[in-house]
Image (cartoon, rainbow, N blue to C red):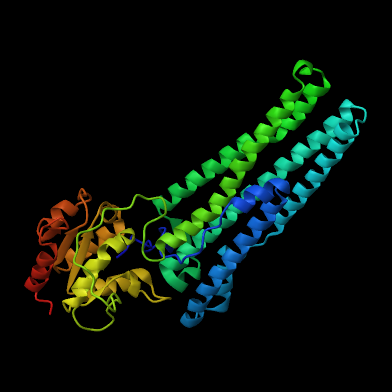
Length: 418
C-alpha cells in the first residue's frame, strides 16, 4: 500500500502529498513585468484569477466521482466550500488599494517633484506615509490570502485523493509530517518576507524625512537610490514568493499524477529490472476472487516498481495495490479485507516504505495472519521498527542482484500461487 493514507479510528484522516492530477506551471515573466508597471495591481488580480480558476477546474474533476459514488449533496457542498470555493474579494480589494496607492504616489511625485510645489513637511510626510502604509497593508492582504487559500485547497484535495468521496464527511484532517514540514517552510518564508517588507515599505517615508530635514543634503540622490534598490528587492522577492506558492502546488500535482515523488526531491536511482512488455501494462488491480498478491509500497516509489509489476503480470500472477480503492470506500476496512484475502504480500523495501507506519502495519498484519512475505529491496534501508526481526524469516531479494528478475520468478513459483 502506498504511503499510509488514513489514520484508523478516532475519526480523523491522515494524509500525504500524493495522488494529484496535473496542471501546467505558470511562468512569472508577466508578473515581473506587468506587476512592476501596475504597482502590483496586475499581480493581485491575475493571481486571484489563477487560484480561483484552478480550484474550480479541480473541483469539476472531483465532483464527477462524488456523483458516481452517490454522496449526499450537503456533504459535497461542504467539501466544495472547504477547499474549492475561492472568494477573490480580498485580493481584488488589495488590487484596489494598490491602485489607490499608485495614484497617491503619482500625485505627490507630480506636485512636489515635477511641478516643484512648496515642500511642506507635514503634507508631504502625510502623503508619503499614507502611501507606504497602504502598500504594506495591501501586500499583507494579498500574501496572507494566497497562502491560506492554497493551503486550504491542498489539504482538501489531499483528503479527497487519499480517502475518496468519504473524505467529505466530518473527518478531522491530520496531515502527515512531510506535509506539515513543507507548509512550515512555506509559512516561514512568508513570515520572513512580510517582516522584511515592513521596513522596505516604510523606506520612502524615511527617505522623505531625511530629505525634508536636510539630513542628506550632501547626498541628495542617495535616499532615492536606496528606495529604488529596496523596491526592486521587494518586487522580485514578492513576485517569486507568490508565484512560487502557486507553482509549488502545481508541481505537487504534476509529480504525483503518475505516482511520482514530490517536486524537488532527488530522483532515485533507476531500479534494475526487466524491460516492460509492449501493449497493456497489466497494472490494473485484481478485483476477482482468486489468489492474488498484495503489493505494499511507498507511493513515491511507484515508478521504480512499475516495471517489476508489469513483468509479474506477464508471468500470470494477479496483484492488488492501492489504485484499486474505489471512491467512497472505507480505506482501512478495504485494506484489511484485501490483506485477509491475499495469498501473499510483496513488500518493496525503501527508506520511505520503512518509515511509513502504514506499510509497516500491512507487513506486520500479514505476518500475524501467517501468510508469506516476499521483500524486494529497492535501495539500502535500515529495517527499523521491528522489521529487521520480522523479515529475517522471509526471503528478501536485492534489486542489485545479477539475476534479479529470475530470483523473483523462482521465489513466486516456490510459493505456488498459480
